[in-house]
Length: 377
Image: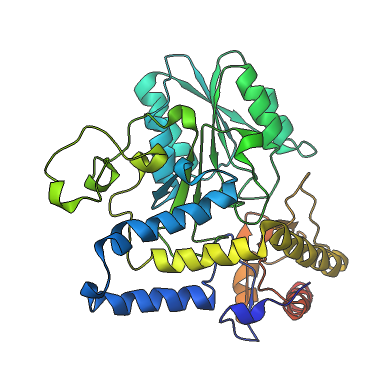
């Protein structure tokens, strides 16, 4: 484990294992955000291009690296649900077509498809995993000649079970189905390559593992869909919007690539500076190094809690996303009791979800193990 603690404002006696819920801002990202709020006091100090065009393009370029995509393929969105709704608007489903999702999938990645099914007459099919089955196996078993859409993530948000996206993509394409991904719980901490997976759309909210402000996110749109219909008709996603002297020369054409799908007020002058710094940090370290650090932390945790009767027994569990089975004698409020020790994690049903990031240290792990030993007796 490498000590990256100094990059964050985390007290020495706080052990934070809840990146899957909310990731803390790095110090330099917070400083960039604070500077941006100060700049709002005197907005005349920046040029129009700096405020409305240069900043979002810098963010777009950094985000594209995480997808192994071009900046032209990335739209700036405020939430995963916005990206999923964009995908739904640009997919052609008919009565009887099947939409395949996972059992217990995150609500935003369910409600979107329920609404689409109601509008089009499509049918939702839910893949359920047996005890010894991987989520990949369960998902592949649900595909049929009537499958026209597969919507999932790179892992299950509750138990951390991975999904082999390349295998799913290949199988979906064999049935003529589109693939829409919510990568909120994996982008930036697990390697991802749009060239290998070739999804139709892939979105990630940035406030968790990407260590960014709330209401920031990124949507990959495959080139085959970049002539589609955006959710909003705003001024800045039109062609030649940089020319403020001609804004009322109304245009029917859009800006290049996926920019037509950008949210309104995409150039969020206060949030994007912080998001940019977080993206630069992640890209500077590299996803491979972040994944290595998280895997080392998880391995140390698993070794420490095994004698306490806690096990990471989900098949093909992601290295950064531990879902520990609790003994029957464990208290129902174990996450609350850990919080009393200034240790922060989540409980999901009968499991304790531990989601470490680069800021976690060996001392954090040791404190977690000792607190669990005290709580479980």
